[in-house]
Image (tube, rainbow, N blue to C red; front, side, top):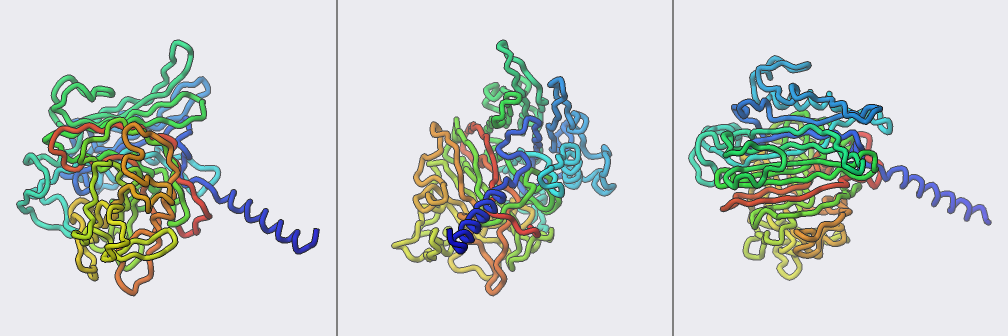
Length: 500
């Protein structure tokens, strides 16, 4: 063999080894296969805050279920029920004095405290410990007379509006939360299964009987949420997370997601330090997401079920967010797979479309190119409310539902997304079509339009939150969504820069 050919072969082998070494997971628990589970719970009001009050007897709406397995097979819980019930006025290690009696600040610090109890040191990345998968629950009611939510980050006085659902004073309350700590159950044939969960309702005086795991059918008058996790001990498979969510006329807009959030810094939609599962933050275009999703009930026509919802934060001039809610902007990309969800983007409503679409081979198609723009691939696009140089016609996002301005790019199943592994037609992945997905989220998100001020350096698209679940968007009758999620992993396709 000639020396030049030897050199070529050696280079090729080295390249293959490099690729294999860098095809690593960004999450602490790849594929949800670790027996010693780490999972947490957070609940929010309309604008991602706790508000003025916690739910009676519940403490701050943060909780966790994290445990080790002893040599005899018993579970040693790292978080006690006393920890989970901590609420304003109750001190805990590391709690700043200013947060002791402030429900919003207290919840922030409680998440950090629970994270410290659950934290796992990763031997593959000693400087990147991780904490837990996050279950996120959100109430879409907004009492505009409360003065609780800022407008694009700016504090505004109470006002009167019929735009948002609210049954009256107190409609932005936090939920009643019930916890079934993970325990080992042995079947008659000796199979050991671990099972636990969180459940509850936003109805502070729930209709009887009492709430608990598996009580979804008890009363159609109650709002309800439930996430139950289970796994056979030592089988090497994934935890299975079973979700249920029900809306009512009093709580018609509810959201329930399972999230992989940043282990430190700002997770998507927040302006303070958080905890989560993403030990390495994925950056476009260099990552994929793998998961198994099986939807049992869809949640009705208003259910914006996200096969994948990714979020981050950067300023309109491309700089990273720094906690200044007046200039930070939350950015979301969401694939809605409910076949009943229609495209609001159309030739007659170009303000609801992004200014352009980019194909996999990087061809830019303007939204006024009616012969080629894929209007039905987009449910809705809206621009940040603090953007200064919007292209006419424009539509700006709801200015109240995040602590800062936000930008949404909402997608629908369409052939243009097939190359990225996403659904290419309506109904794929919906009820009766459970499947395992491998989504090239990084490549797709690198080609989506996001607003940026002219002449500024393009933002690095580093994603601080990735989640799956549904947003039942102001249902006009009681609706139920039910689904299972497993095998969730975020796979890096190249080595991330050290600064990420």
